[in-house]
Structures are given as C-alpha cells and as structure tokens.
Length: 352
Image (cartoon, rainbow, N blue to C red; front, top):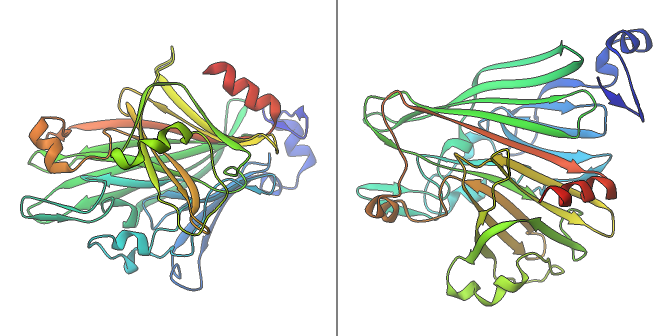
C-alpha cells in the first residue's frame, strides 16, 4: 500500500482525492531540445515521495539526473551528448559522458582504452551510446502497489563480431525512494563472445562532501596500482575539492549478505542524507570505486561489476574473461535509492 505524506492510502482513496494519479506520480516522455543532447528521448519518473529520476532512452536506458525532495543525488557533467556524438576511440567516451546516476559500461568490454588482438577498445565500451528500441512505459496497479516501469532493449553488435542484446526493465512504485534495474544480457550471435559489464553509479554533492563517508562491508579492498597505496587509508572519506587531484580507483570484494546481495552507501552526516546501491552478488561479485575530488569533477562512483577493471587481453590470458556462448544469457539486479534521513541511515548501517 503506498505510503505518502506520512500515511498509507488505498487505491480507492487515491482515486477519490486526485483527478488522476499523474497529479502525484508517473512517467512522462519528453525529447531534449538544445545543445549536444538535442533529440535525446527521456522518460521522467516521479514517485510522489520526492524521488525523481530520468531514464535516457537513447543511452541504453541509463539513469541520468536523480534527486530526492529537491536534493540532488547524481553527479552531472555538461559533456552529456546523444549517441550520434559518440567518439569510440581512446578516451573519446568521456566527451559525451554526462555522469548521471547510472551509466552502463560494457557489454563486451569496459575499462581503460586498449587493444585486444586486432580490435581497438575505447574507454568503457559502446553500450551506453546505443539507442534503445522496443521501449515500453507502464503505469498500473499490481495488488496494493502502483508500479511504474520503463522497459526496452539495446544491442551491441558488429558484422562478423559480437551480437549482445541488453534487455532492461527499470521499475519503481508510488511512494518509493528507490528504483530497481533488472537486466538480461543475451548472446544472440553464433559465436562465443566476451562479456564484461560494470554499473557506473555516480554520486555528487551533497551526497559527496567533506562531511560524507562511504559505508560498506568488505572482505578486502585494494588500490588500483601502487601509486594509490597511500590513498587507500582515506578511500572512505572525501576531501574538499582541489584544482589538481590525482583520481583514485579502489577494488572492493564486498561481503555478501544472507540474501545473496552486496550493498554500499555514501552518507552526508551533516545533512542526515545519503544514497545507496544494492546488487546481487552471484553475477556481480566485485565493486570498483572511482574517487575524483577535483574542482568541478567532484564525484565518487560505486561500480558493481563482473570483474575488476583489468585489461581484457590479460583476463583472457588468465582464464578470467567471462564468455557468453551462443544463446546464453545472464541476469542482473541492481537497486539504487535515497537514504532520506538519520533513521534510514541507521537502518542501512544495521544491515551491514
């Protein structure tokens, strides 16, 4: 039963007190009309609790801006552009990376630019610059819950290359302060294909601030490279923005709870406000943490992944590269949400 404004409402009560439920919550389809994102289709979702987020339909149904009760959750960068502006070479991915609450990296590769055999691989792969098709939006009662869903498909394919299909369902409900991403990745081709995936969840101010800290329970954590060894002791804290900060990446092996999930949060103690990501560990046993404290680029990303960021050719040589056989599919489940007050933060800490 939806909880709104401090009390529970039945379906019949909500029908009686609103002209239409879109007065409180719903999904609105829009098209951006200016700058590099011009022409991008967006689904704007609001749940009535104060939780709002954008789904970028022309960016593989990635999550863009997100906020709770007027406080932003996601980090946003002005580089955001439509897939038609995508530069696949080297670090060109960053020229259209606009941050947002979640950017998908993969499907056959993520990580730093490299070469794997005769194939040149640009930063973080191609799927996030792919327009979705077969998009469907639904708003309907399911039992006592009014459920909002955005669904679609995005394909990474090349002639004589990979043919990987991402089937994505994003759902939330009336009164909720979270969203759920349910993905299926299927090899629609007739040859085995490498499969690497990372959910790049980008948190910015006021979630990230000098008053904030990372909350998670790890089996282990290590820096990416020896140059980050000294910074490891501070990976859960956040400095004030500086003009020239050496960004850090830390590799986490999170502890799995009794339900088979891992979770991490960043909380601002001064505001009693935070955000979390929770994911199923069987398919995503690792998490990369990207910490960037530069002025303007002031962000911490928590990134559930199926392998730590490692060159694909090295993973292949070590036998660690995930290969999807023809017709094989794998399912992922990732939840993102707000921790709106001190009670919610305490409840999260109690689950660690």
